[in-house]
Amino acid sequence: MLQQTQVDTVIPYYNRWLESCPDLQCVAEKNIQEILTLWEGLGYYSRCRNFYSAVKEVVKNHGGNVPSEWKQFRALPGVGDYTAAAVMSIAFHKPLPAIDGNVYRVMARVLGIKHLTPYNKNRIKNRLEKWIDTDHPGDFNQALMDIGARICRPNKANCIGCPLSDFCKASALGTPNQYPTRKKKKPIPHIKVVAGLVWFKDTFLILQRPNTAMLGGLWEFPSGKITSASHPSKELQSIMKNEIGLTVTIGEEIGSVHHVYSHFSMTFSVFHCFIEHKESLQSHGPFRWIKPSEIPCYPFPKANHKIFDLLEFSK
Ligand code: SF4
Image (cartoon, helix red, strand yellow):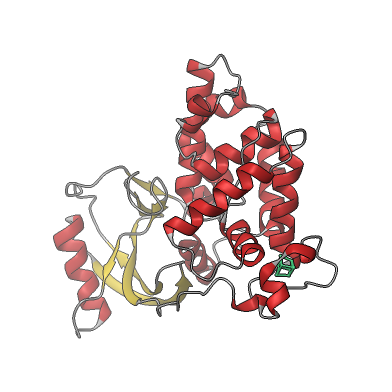
């Protein structure tokens, strides 16, 4: 949960998760929809799907016990070197350095490394393997993480009071914030999307995103990118016809919402749409016709919740 996400954001999700799933067996017995609903709103849903697959594997192949050997744990879905080293050192006291972006920054400053090239990253890893406290490897890793998160911040290194200041090269040079050099962030692209709330009587249509796609397994309104200069409602009509196989009557515009993901931003224009007969949908994955009261039973991306807010379904 904490990957790419701040602690304050995670805490309510973590507590809710533990109330609902206090142990691995309990996670393994739930279906993926229930699990995604618990995660709903936290983003980066591949973490959730990977965690679910890993738990299933632990229950099926390891008797419900998290493997304590690097090779077996590292092979679980979603586990990379950092997660494996963090868990191995904190839970199983193995002397393995857990190196994330914060730790690379702290160590680049301590060693006076300007450029985080693969060669220099390897130097950092080798140095940490020598320095790690073999009696308390978990404490060692967590101390470095904390220094990176609280003291040695990207733009503000608080060297006074830092326990590493006596032997930190960047601090001695007086320019710690210049280590390591940072790549300039490229501006993220913006895309315009049109979506339809397709009504049949008192139900509307939702489609499930493929598991392999971004936000995989979540549900959403039928939508598509706006690619022409024509009015979004016209574009929506042709998306419905050509991509979903529905002939819809476009109704009132519900409004538009803006949402920012890590690598792009998006504006959704949303319209009510109506059909008189349920036609068969064209080559689409799972779909449902649901009533507004059934929204809590399905996990939706945050952008869709912003649309629900416009509709005031929950009020
Ligand atoms: S002494 Fe300063 S630059 Fe070095 S690790 Fe500590 S806070 Fe960072």
